[in-house]
Length: 207
Image (cartoon, rainbow, N blue to C red; front, side, top):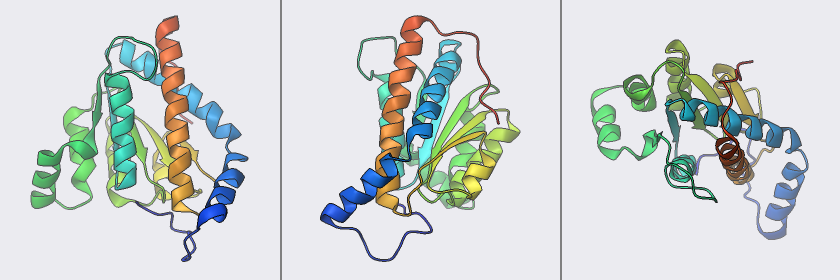
């Protein structure tokens, strides 16, 4: 699991863990609205034959793969599959890139290979400081790919490089990651609702 840069050294245990999560949930309302907007926006892009790329490190890599699985498969109700690729799950590409290029290129090179103008890149980083995620965001922006970032507290480099951000207000990496999963599920529910209703023309989410 990647951790937020401001996370204290002592790990939370038991009721302290739950208390930290409860406190962060109480500040998560604005993030819910943003996640719903992202779900509708991604539905617009994917129903117009665009593509979603997703990446993260460690536990965030697992959550990235969770998101793509929900879109290629289904979240709740049956619907058509949509193009969603988890860049952190491409093991042969990952090892080849790490062998031949600087570590920062891990996701950026894949973004350049798979992404097209108008596509969407979702990046997850509890700290918002992962160099490979920041490089991917910058590469995507240069290619006119919309970048949506899940991070911990702002300011952080990934939030600054993205078009829009869901920033969980907690110093605890575990808490940030738990609420990222909530945000992903809210996004998926909004995506399904938009698809079922018939996606509207693509709406901008750029700040």
